[in-house]
Length: 231
Image (cartoon, rainbow, N blue to C red; front, side, top):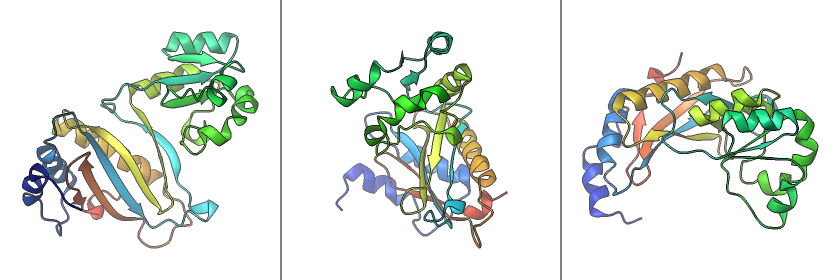
């Protein structure tokens, strides 16, 4: 794959074979984010899990102390008092059965996270074929199926992110923007790694965190020493 001049210049400062301390890796990634827009900084964690086994799955959520730098649009499926509570908490859209045809027939997907009260999951289930493949289906493990819609909405708005294994047993998550300070990115990265360490399935044998890298949207990846983040 051919890269541009800016990418190649940034890549020269990074030793692709080296394993860096988290703070050092973040500093390098921040320096290499030279695009004209505010690049997202992401962490990619290859685990020793085998996601084909239910007892080795990882799925959860963590509130990043400094947020993600992105405005998150929240849709809540709730009715009555819970719908009012969701709106008061800052949800962008709230509804129930009326939202099903809007999503199914009109292809409306102007939201980033879906929250639902447990009694609405029968309604939300009808949208599984649309929401599921996009990773938008509410899930109790991620705290998005709950009666406490106020906390759910406020946490998401404050910078709560979901993490889960992909088909290659890798976790991909944003930890902020290139405009963040190194300290803000480091704090977010640390919060993520703490959550992943706590989420380690007991069935996983051997090395749990195999490799970690951080990268900006357009920049080269920087490898983090996994030993430095294992609790």
